[in-house]
Amino acid sequence: MISRTQALTVVLLIWAAIYLPALGSLSIKGEEGRRILPAISMLETGNYLVPQVGGEAYFRKPPLINWLVAVSFKLLAQRNEWTARLPSTLSVLAAAIAFVIVARESLGAHGSTIAAVIWMTNAGIIEKGRLIEIEAIYASLCTLAIIFWLSFWERQRSAWLLWIPASIFLGLGWLAKGPVHLIFFYAIVAAVLWQNKNWRPLFHPAHFTAILIMLGIFAAWAIPFAHATGNAITATKWSSQFTGRLRGSDFRFSSWIWNIPRGLIYFLPWTILLPLTRPGGFAKEKSQRLARALAWGTVVPFVTINLVPGSLPRYAMPGIGPASWLLGMTLCADNVWWPRWLGGKAFSIKNRQRTVAAVAALVCVCMGAYAAAIVPQVHRRQSVKKSAAQIDAAVPPSEPLYALDPNYQPIFFYLRSKLVYVSEMVDLPTDAKYLLVRPEREQEVMESNRWAPRRAHLIFRLTDYRKESILLLKID
Image (tube, rainbow, N blue to C red; front, side):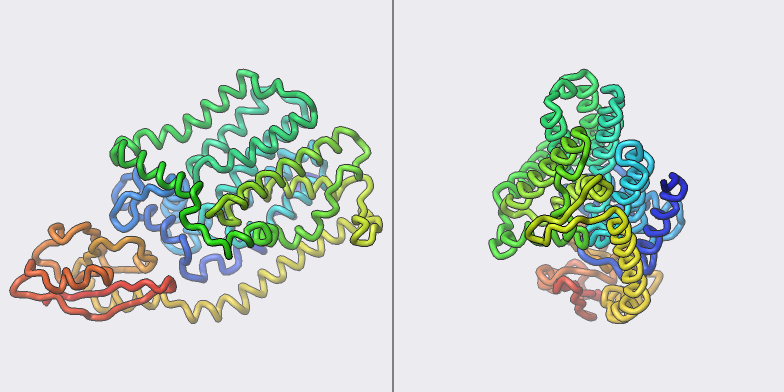
């Protein structure tokens, strides 16, 4: 039997081999800037209540990820890609450690270790866990809630221990992205209670207390935020975003039809082993009930979320946690065999352990090769840092650089120039010399008499990886 220390050592080594190499070598991409720039604004202004992007309040996501990036920057005294992405990688490690420590009694020494390895080595968690995007942190918090709830349920602990620890992670999940993770958590809870024909825990005072704790964690930020930004504006913004998701305002059939296949790709290479997850392989009825509950509690929300118009496969990533638990307990079951359509042969315990070890080793080797061979090639072709360097070279260090209604611009993370956000032309000082504007406001600035007799003229135009442009103007 593998000891707890040995299991933790294996987890730490695999995590370090996958998530740390070249973590900060590539410039920010995708939505990373929306997580990093508000954190920088928080550190500079001291306003940790209202996230800001481009000098404007950011309503689309709660601020937990911004807070974590700000803490990382503050504690490590560095503002770079590595320190920005560290919270995502640590959240993945936290869930893996919880599998090894908290779920050990329920899953067993080998089962808990295998579940942790599966959690760290699937494509979706690797991709998001090496970026500072919400999904890795969000999925990790939901997984932590499920691990604590299932572990204490299996060990028949008190209702208070069953609900209260999970509620803390669920409340933090609200602060990360909103309430969608509750679908995955309560799907597991409902499936377990259904299989055990015991619905009493739902009506225990501990559950209602847990709901209050969860809502209280979110409300501690949401109420002051709404007050600071205007209750009516906040309500309108949040409701429009929620209803927009349900209406599928961004719906594209050609993308939507691939949601479920792409969601299964996120769990590769372990998706290949999912046909093994059948309750019949367990000798104990209790284990069979749990396996059925995990199967239903994972599949139903996974399919439901992916079928919502306008949904994206990453929205179903909280299901990776319970899927890892199910596969971990399956690979340690008494009897495991491939389904008839895959040959129907028995899969011995030794071969299962060898498979897990081989897959984990292969993933580590592939990530090492990626960091050593591919990242340097991509690094040389990055344009965001080069664009920021162009701007810094054109603007004297002593001159402030004004950004007029800039919206989200990833290059701002790399600028050394003193950047000042302004929303309208009237907010620009008359002695301003350097100005960043979006193309749609170029004519307005060019024709303005605000700086007469000086006039604005174009220095250069930059286009980023999103095919969006920003213009550097000089008023001279």
